[in-house]
Length: 285
Image 1: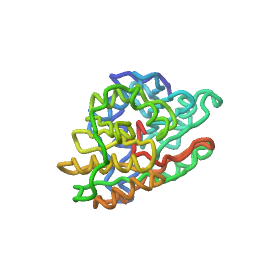
Image 2 (image 1 turned 30 degrees about the vertical axis):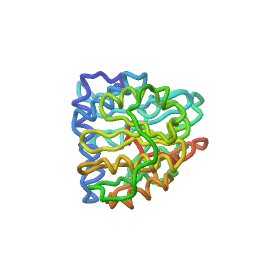
Image 3 (image 1 turned 90 degrees about the vertical axis):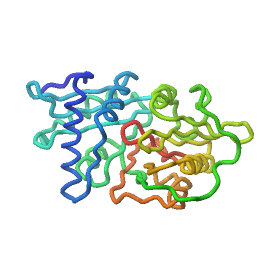
Image 4 (image 1 turned 180 degrees about the horizontal axis):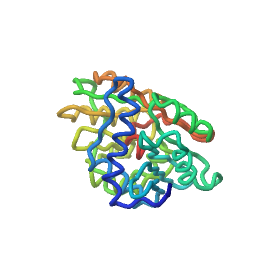
């Protein structure tokens, strides 16, 4: 078994590997597995590589059998992917990949990842590394029904990552300037302002995915989510940590359906659960 850096040419094979691996988790429970299109999967993995993250493939001969990717922003580290082909599981490949993308254990003060709640083996592996479940990640979907008015004040398209820096600091705890450039290429960005002061931002993707949504505080983030749902013209999907209670309340008030397969946000001891955030997704948080 060989570990090597991921190349762009690997991404179609890794997409197929991901689909097979996640189906092996969901289908035994009779749940429909996630099935992102190749374009979505490849865009996320390519951004991790392009923004300086670690992405590795385990190969047996010419065939990829597992892969892992992680990104960091300053002192914060996030495990974005770790998937092993069903026929290669229980062989220690996942542990080897986690070791490889983890890096120096003292390099990052705070570490995070998101898993599916129905993956007890993976969750135990991460818990032994100090990443323990801190809050559920709730997936909501559906056509929003009429509800409260959007956030009071004006709104305008985001003009610069600098404008989002204080919002990132409040919602995430670290800078996401490089990710804003990526999200803005694929989605409609909005800065939500109150009295001409930027208090939240949101991204709305063409297929109905909303997120990230982040605010200076829980009320601002909830107002931004209200605004996005008010503008929606079809089905939406939004993923919200349970710790962001105000945003959960908005999703429920708007009549969105709750998925029966929540995720789990796993945190190291020094990382805090977010309270004013709807996620970009499981890969890019």
